[in-house]
Amino acid sequence: MRRSTRFTPNSWPICRRSRSDPDPSMAVKSTNITEVAHRIDIQARWQANGHRGAVLWFTGLSGAGKTTLALELENRLFNKGFNVYVLDGDNVRHGLSSDLGFSHSDRTENIRRIGEVAALFADAGAIVITAFISPYQSDREQARQAYPEGFREIFIDADLEVCERRDPKGLYEKARKGEIPDFTGISAPYEAPSNPDLTVDSGDLTVDESLQILMDYVEETFVLK
Image (cartoon, rainbow, N blue to C red; front, side, top):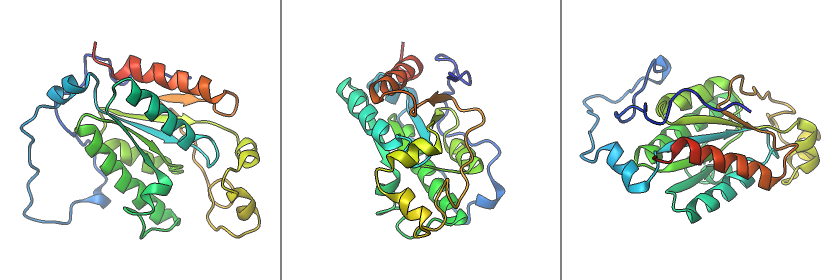
């Protein structure tokens, strides 16, 4: 399990969203626009919440436990007074990304949108938990650039065999039959994180054990001292 060392508790930038090395393919096409600066300092938002804003980016195969852990983590953090919200893959595809499919390009655009939305939540001082397969490393890195100072890539790690055995939505069975094209782990690749900020071995740990790791991480990393 790797703990993040990118930022220490007292070294976080005061600035708002700072993008470094933006993807030139995602250049802003609109003209005559100016980013509006908020009158509320980001540290004032943190002080009001008692914690820093953050993006906890859960990634892993379907069936690894991303949504289960995200929702229960949200519940536990909320009950402890955190400003927290979950963005889940299925929910987002009912609205924000209802026009997208599951091709490589559509997956990339879906993650780009989620990265931007998650950054807005974090900029408002919330801890946003995202639960998306997000199979491509380059897409996850692009999402990080939307809120680099508070982004944490969290690998919910379970072997394909474990995920397929769980198969809560019956998707692997359909994918094996060829009924679902471009299904991650079967007919489309999954690029596991090479250097995640945190790994949760959900294939071996119980839900409660996994949640304890996540709770400890959030409280150690984002709560104001």
